[in-house]
Amino acid sequence: MKILDLFSKLVFVVCLILLFIAVDKLSIIAVKESPFYEYNGNKINLNMVKTVRPRIDYIITYQEDDYSDLFHKYSTVLDENEINNIKKFLELAQKSEFYSVKINAYMMLDKEKIVLYNSEDFLKSPSKFVVDDYFLNTLRKEGLDEFQYKNLLKIKSIIYDDSKKFFEDVISYAKLKDSIWMRDHIASLGRSSKANKFMSHIPKELKTKELKSIDIEDVVHSLKNAYSQYIGIR
Image (cartoon, rainbow, N blue to C red):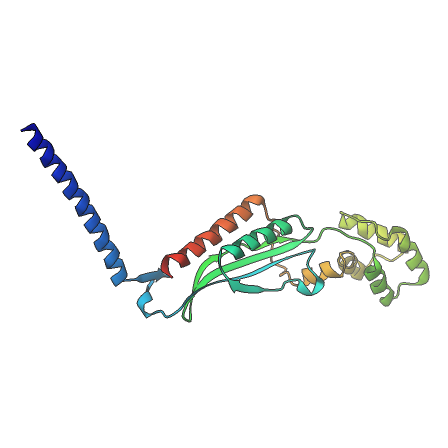
């Protein structure tokens, strides 16, 4: 009797396992027969989609970029290699004096754009000021005379971290009159031509948000999740 009871229990367990396997396979078949992707409250029938393409657009620009590459928009395929590239770019930007970062990942289901991830706008503005050739030549066009020019050479190439101190020294050494024009232009001219081009692309309402290591980890994690969504339906 004990052997029969043991055998009965074993048969029951085997049947239960087979039942679970059957239900799992039926679920897979059901999914395949009804492959819908939900987006913004709508369902997209993947059986009607001919092509699925993962894409990423991003602007990661910083001081070390060539002048012509500032704010260049990159648009390419979203994959693991590109995610690794973006991580390296973010780490380089984090160490730079100034940078701007914006990343958008999405899928194209034929002509339908499915947004997978939008990053925050990360921004660090230039904070260094210097009397350089660009600064001197610009002021000469505004009427700087030879005496004033030679006096400014005394502080040429000195890096300032304080815009107020920079302004005061320029006014003092060049014997310039404190004016509205001077207050509006001295600091911006002291940023260098590349920094000024950078700032010309920044909306005035955009606030500083510096890129931290935890932000880089979050961006990379979010991009991997976005890519996983594509892998799940391709």
